[in-house]
Length: 293
Image (cartoon, rainbow, N blue to C red; front, top):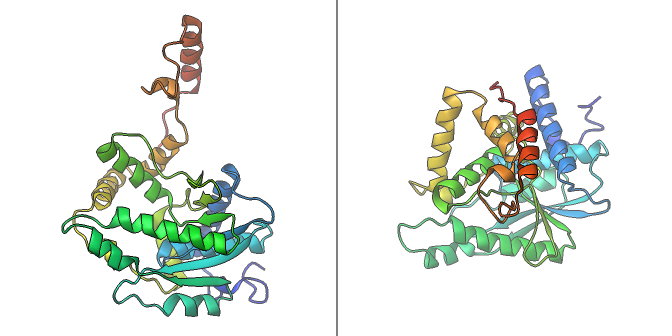
């Protein structure tokens, strides 16, 4: 049986037996598997550095990856990693104790990037950009030291949508966080296996499993963040039209360069009447108004 304590990984010990939770768990596993397969994340024999912040998303990701390994669907080695960035009051023992108890191979790294961020960022400015760069640089270094081929991050569907709208509203570009990319040095993959998973599902899952969630007080303590503003807008759209987030996410996977305005993506100068007829016909045949659920 799936929940036989002699078989299932310790990460799932004590899982609720309710039908609602089983459906939630099945949906998360299915979504993670879809993302891994759709974006070609698996290389047999690979080793992944799975990055944990101690938040609901990273716990959900770790559990989902281990279930896929348990089912024989993820033939990779996993090393969990937490980067302790020196935030005052950070509960440094929570994740090491949790990972030891769950029998998860791990590495805890201490790097005081908090002091650097506080020193370099002017008063009133947000910490996110510099904090993220420093964190990512350290994670790449750790991945190389551990012999990993990929750095695995816990960004979910809603993170990807919010980043898209932040770039749209504030950056003047259509871009977001891709599920798979290669780092600038060209020696590591970066994967986001929660790309299809809703934030709400991560919240429900991690709470139901009673994982020891650690809040991020560094970013969360700043008012007026662009991401929080975008999240508020998306929450309003979702409230008025349930299912709107999923429709917008679907749009990110269904892009037609010929019906945008970027000449670097489509050869407008070389477009002929014959080409235009084909494009128009293909668009008409594929047009479908998505249903909100």
